[in-house]
Image 1 (spheres, helix red, strand yellow):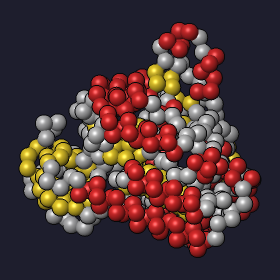
Image 2: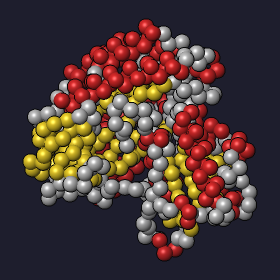
Image 3: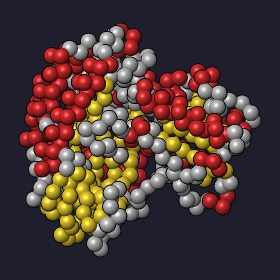
Image 4: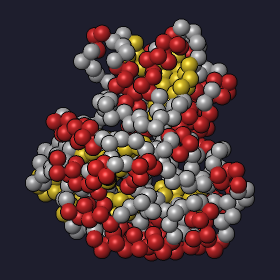
Length: 487
């Protein structure tokens, strides 16, 4: 789900219609079409939605024109993501003219942000459903079927969908997402997530382990543990993380934090690769890094957004760490996990950012030398503290120029990092055919770097040791030498 480094295009600008084959297929007569935008959590949520609706008589389809129900799972992280959704709604409207019985629903963060206002702005929309209301979909669909618009955007204090077995949409049968926590308590001034997904609450570790074990039994070889802030995972019997102080002594003594959860998952399936996303520098602790070092099957890759290299801008963003504290964390990762890859999120042109602040960002990048990154120009989001308190005062030309400088530096560092793999033999999990050549496989190594190599007699889902012979700034090129011992 990652983009090529050095580019602005990310997952929120992709869409996917998905096909689902169900055991109940004969009994399901209505057709559901889903498009997902935004973070990996949205794609995971779409799998939950498909699972819930499969029990309500829906099979999914890749053909928009034949759908009885069209759902678009939305992102609000940037204005561009919302514009993309509105353009898709125009497309749905055109299709609806030839299929007047088709109903359209908007899910996710954009639905939560705009609520019933969406029905006024987009006349085609019949249903608006926030991220915590998917279990109410059967009732909402009944409302729509009876000719009424339906809205449920109530944020929950405890919903984690831990009791819903997701339907794996458009799956390669090899990799899967497992949601472990929802919401975020870190009120970064640029971010809408706390307003669209609510407070942090974690999922019962036993339900997580059950889902991971089930995926292994079904042939999956890799899982990514998902959360807006995985490092804040904390299970003490249920409830919001902020209420942990009120927990009993027994609850505190038997609580499970993220480092412990990582170990439980790694121990449960020692031949399955374990990844996680996304981390927050202020919440990542040494025990997480030590757990990664302890287990071979926990991938050596950390996505560690920093957003800026300037202490002044970090404070304005309400990032509860300094540049120096970030460096200390990076140094600890390098010490404990010398072969660990690190990626970043970076915002160019945050309000009040000076040239000196921008140079601080470039110097931070020079210190870390990230393997890859996700870089954006600042986009003001309505309702955030930055939108309410700070003027978006950086000219677009300046934003674009600073962003381009960040991208160019990342491309330089990316090439430096991929070159370090050349000459080594590394384990690769085959995920599918290369996009550029039917004669080559594509997979990733532990560090999350894409590797391509000739197919020979290997197949999707194989762990293969690949000798790396060449590279670009984003891709390793090699040849398979043998099956890995992990097959």
